[in-house]
Length: 331
Image (tube, rainbow, N blue to C red; front, side, top):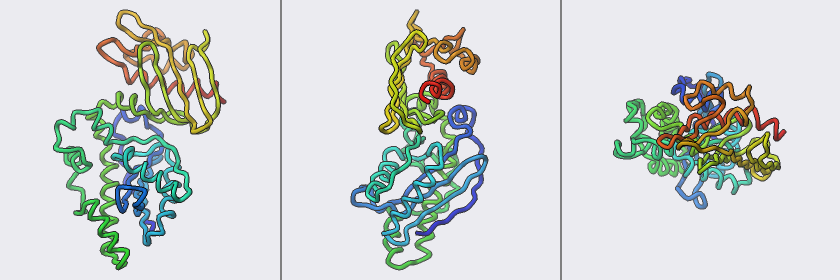
């Protein structure tokens, strides 16, 4: 296995909205190259990871010099991903991560469970770019953001696979460098793609697809009738069940298996407004952090007004619950 590392230019945050969810979190910007689309018959041949933490970024590439190097690549890939709090991908929820998990299972390796910020999913489902652009390939988004001219590689993913086959047979450094450049440009451009969230309904995307929280991450939330339901994964799994009481008017179901947790918060409904008693649930001290939000009034948090859903408010309430309240209950 060939391992290449270099310190990489740290890019500034995409903005305040992004920081609401990811500030001070360690990121791993991640992309893979494979010999095909089916993990049962294909192999992982190259991983590219930009590790971002504390104002620094490091770019790592792991390339197979022999098809048997796959296990080494997966082991090192998983080690690097385990150091991150969340992973950034482009279509990674549907390809990169499922492919890695299946190939890792075949090698007897456990893939770390981390929140995956899949920019493709966010753009596809929570923006109007789908109607504006000819397609949603990563290169289409690069052109939209005006950063496509930074690319140096001229090959496609399919061509990269063919070059890899020739590289295994010849050991050509020229072929190797073309393969590495293709992956490097993909991952570097993905890192530069983060500002695209400004063109999305990012708070709604986070509500639906989840976000990192203290002690784990949210998988998704749902507001239905008079109940706000939150599903997530805990880093330190435990078995815990609680039912609503006057002091704790919510239910919690946590399982040691897989670290799954589900919380149901009761809401009230008056005059077309759905709201919850944030001060009662969080406590006065923790609820202070929500006072500046447009949907917060006198200890109550508006979830929906009939014409508007307050995704940002609900997300920040959930983050505060996991930070301040949940540790007191579970541990």
